[in-house]
Image (cartoon, rainbow, N blue to C red; front, side, top):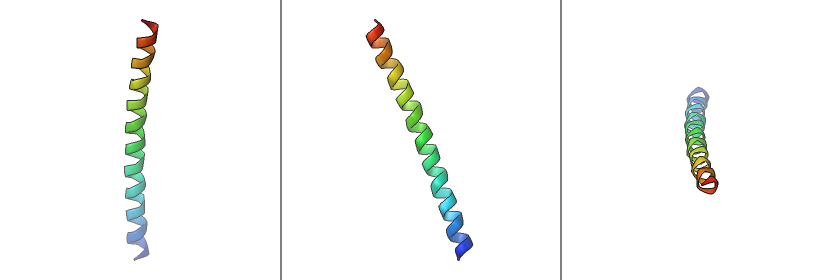
Length: 40
């Protein structure tokens, strides 16, 4: 029981990491667009 719960916790954290990195990429892309807009 405990082992299964730990495994589920791991996969949950893994999904969170993927989401976080995905948001980070979008955020950096957004920043680049904003910077380009202000430079022009």
